[in-house]
Amino acid sequence: MRRSGSQFGLTDEQWAAAVGEVREVILDAAYDRRMTWYGEIASKVSAVRLDPHSSLMNYLLGAVFAGEHEAGRPALTSIVTHKHGDKEPGLGFYEMARDLGYRFEEPYVFWAKQVQDVFKLHGRPDRHI
Image (cartoon, rainbow, N blue to C red):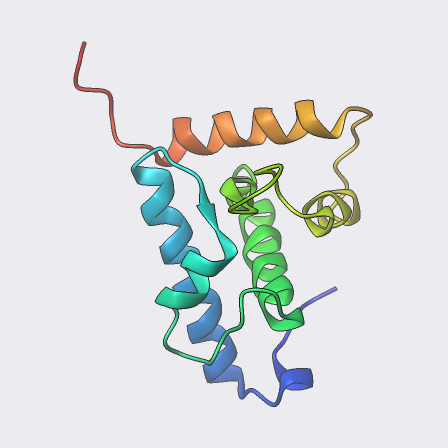
């Protein structure tokens, strides 16, 4: 299913800009090999008004996840978690993973592997070698 922003009243250009900005915010965190959270992402997106707990945020994260999957890369959105509490991704992360064809019995193990793979691919090179 191709996601779009039309149901949120966004033009194709606004949608593409918002998806790009969300991806860049997550990539910045990945480069620093750190987790990020919904509120941090929302605060750094300027293409659209974005509430961290909105359906729009979920759709944008889903579009980023799908784009990474289509490109053969690990789930970049795996490093987006709740800021407080369990500090894990929301249930939508696992639902999207299954929708994209990932198969796993242990969600936590799947998530941890994706986080590790994201940091390997996008993280700052270790300079202590």
